[in-house]
Length: 177
Image (cartoon, rainbow, N blue to C red; front, top):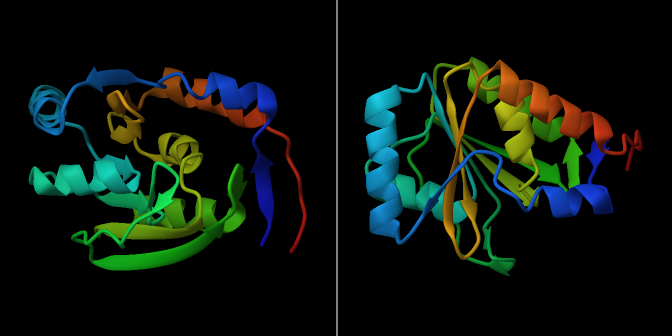
């Protein structure tokens, strides 16, 4: 396994801030607002990162092209989330890192014409950055914001450039394990 990026202590604090639009509220409120955004902006693709947000989207009849889950919610193990997918891919991605294996899986999923579920052995949080970087323009990347709601990132060149700067500032470590 090759670790491409490691989270720095400085970035850990910065990444607690939403990368996009924070929709506050209950499941019903956040899903209603999100569906309104989808109707208005008609995203080219929807990517969900996180077990709870992926499950909530599906419960609201919104089916992302790519869902990234790790069978954890709020750092507690949960039963695997049942999601509609044409294909399930398993990857290793230790906490506070981004592996080449995870990057490749996200790229391949977004290039395919099928609905893909990536199950992460480790942690999926930082993979939001890769999803933003790899998703086509006008996509939505959605993730949960603990105790607040969900974040919707509208993918465009400005957002991709912001993510590229974040990734560049992460410590690149090339280690095989």
